[in-house]
Amino acid sequence: MTGRLDGKIGIVTGGSRGIGRAIAEAFLAEGARMLITGTSNATVDQGLKALDSGDACRGLVVDFTVDPTGKTVIAKAIEHFGGLDILVNNAGTGSFQGAFELTPEEWDRVFMANLTAPFFLAREAARVMGEKAGGSIINMASIAAQTGGLAGSPAYAASKAGLVGLTRSLARRFADLGVRVNAISPADIETDMTAGWPAELRQRLIDLTPLGRFGEAAEVAGAAVFLASDEASFITGQTIGINGGAHM
Image (cartoon, rainbow, N blue to C red; front, side):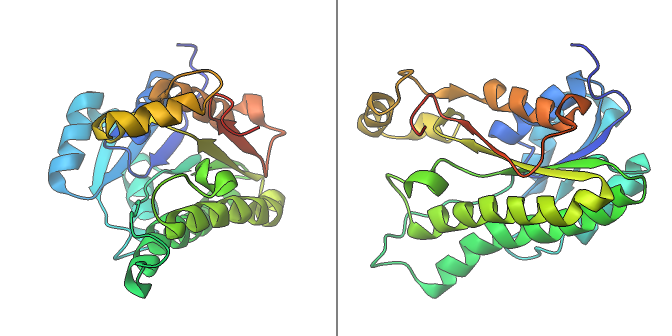
């Protein structure tokens, strides 16, 4: 690696597994120090063990469907590492309640994790980043924001579409602080979760993708490294689609 994030301090929510872990791994390899979050001690411990980076990576248990404020997460990063340069709002939740089954409680649960928590985390992060006039916030959206989602709940697609809008809004409002805000919008990525999807569903999604495969978590992580680095210093308010051409 090239040390593109040397000296940077970052947070990846949901960094204990899947895409989040791949992003944390890439950030660490580029010289950053990281705080990752997970929803249980077991998942956090598993993530830290897999990342195997000693004191350069710390973990914190947070359930954003219960506490979306983000203050504890930001405070822990500052306590461990003395500052904050990068926030990746990767933690989220899915839902398979259809339009006619969706309950208000499920709607609120999905929005709490996928949209409410990213806003409050970004706001707390921007306050810290603004003190030294610089930082990068990356929101993990989804192709469902553009397509409405081929499967799953309207709550998921709506929350991710809201996250794209929030990205643009915060990019405008945090620009004076020197804080950039962008989003990454992946399609179907090979993770432990998607590996368990029915073969018929996986094939249907592959058939809808011009490049003819699922993406790799490392391909999402590469975009995150770029957006977090100084190479993207004039990029804000953008959404990068990593979808193999499934949405153009």
